[in-house]
Length: 332
Image 1 (cartoon, one colour):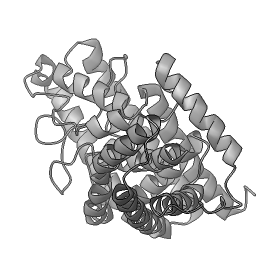
Image 2 (cartoon, one colour):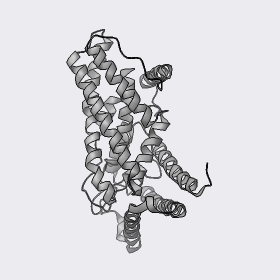
Image 3 (cartoon, one colour):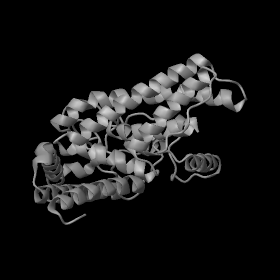
Image 4 (tube, one colour):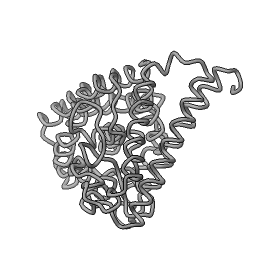
């Protein structure tokens, strides 16, 4: 159960992983022929530069990126230490007490950092940072968890590790934790990893540790389609409009409810334009194949498909829309 609960924390870190996939420079970037990149898979449509894959960063997102990167860098270390503890337990050997203490201390520190980060994201006036927060909550909810539950479970597991290291009885589980549910989820996860290739469960520790940033771009700049002035102008206009919308969203929290709904409507229009643009290049076979492979590998390491990511982002934006409707008094 210890490993299962820690995996849940790493699932949350994976949302940070998503937003860090395109860290190339700390400023707004255009895609392909100039600097950054977005996400594509092998299906007809590409995972376009939307949500955490948007290369255009708001000022608030730029300020918070180092903290997100710091949290994300903890994943490989967690994976390594937990794999050692898991191996010891599987062979019936008591894990090294010093290793247990080190991991327990690391968990406490990571949970504190994670709670602080989530609070900053949620309290920000900026749309992009709020979107990260809502995406985190939606991702955890898809695994039957919440950030509050994760923090409670992780602190309890830290105490259990310390108790094991000191050879004393573990503390009772907090009342908020359903132990039987956790055991059933852990069993189901183990069975899925052993026999099923479906991506309904959490990502594995090994895959998460091996996940790398996406370094290639969807366009090399040598595609025949870009020889058309119309295509080139469409692309430049799309980049310009998207970047301007992200900048405008810096004061999203100060908008009135109708303003927030209108902003989400404009964002959907941008997403639709990217879908059309990327689909055209995909049908022409002019998407950078190195980029496609890197993106497929990254999504796979996160335990997600293209469809699941799109659905997750849709749920996130629907939640933000409902929040605005609630401000209007139309949703209880």
